[in-house]
Length: 406
Image (cartoon, rainbow, N blue to C red; front, side, top):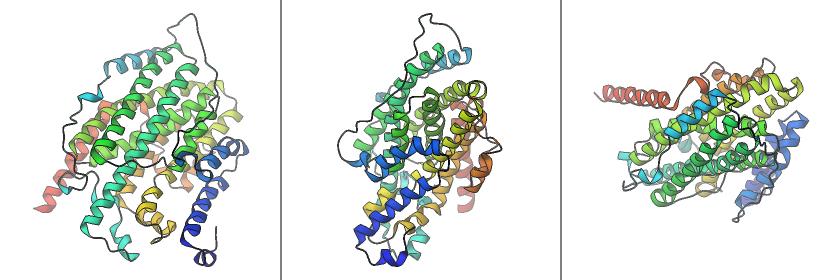
């Protein structure tokens, strides 16, 4: 969007700031539905231009929604009632995790992330020569950045879950929602404790993640809060946690994620149950299309969220351009697996609730997300089943490594 020759004449800090603004503007320019732009635009300005999430002070976000009371306390949604029972049985205490575990984030024997989370060949092609110690330090930073964004997302989920519990129109959904508020508080606790006591590093909230959280807090429609948090953010988080669980060698992080994944599977299932009938039978076609378009734009924000510009600013600002860093991240095999599992969990749920029509599918195909159209939705995949499949996948990978070494 900005001429490279003009950028080359500017001081480094000015150039980097202009490139960041151009990235933010390019996201908004892709939004064609004025209703979606009206919903996301103000949050995008607050998050990517004004940097409200990075001002070093608590962020005040006005929240508006209607609280839905029912003084008859009906048993009105059997599937949600069953999910509530499962949630009560699935509660766990973060203090019971093996916090005594010694975690060295730069020890390859218990690597937090796979080595190919960074495209080292691309780094070298761009003239950057890193020592082994510097590579380990960069992987440490990438892992801390990922877990920091998980933590910030869980804080957003905590507040959204509290709002949704007030606003949801099924009383059995309120019972379940109360368990999710507890879950999210526990997730904030354990991710922050891990970052604070084991990795000793915390990154600020990513601008794109702030935009999504800000937009959800402002939106007064209960189903939009469900769509944004339960389907989009929780769905993507479930895929991200799954990949990290499968590939990390660090035992404390693996045990932490095992517990979180089983909670998150219930959360996304809750979203599918609440929205499936509502979107198909209660909304007008115009309202359904608005939510379909909104979900697509948020999917783009999610995709752009995982470019780790905060790591770039710490390690490479002034050495590489943002475009070069983006190329490193998007071509890293580990990050490609990351995106595959993230969207493999989210897109099928959009299909299940009626927001993946033939009208919108070409837009997903245009950005490379069509491969996920046929996956299993959350109501067909329990947390326990996910853990089994992830463990089986890890075992297969280990066997391949043994065979290759032999």
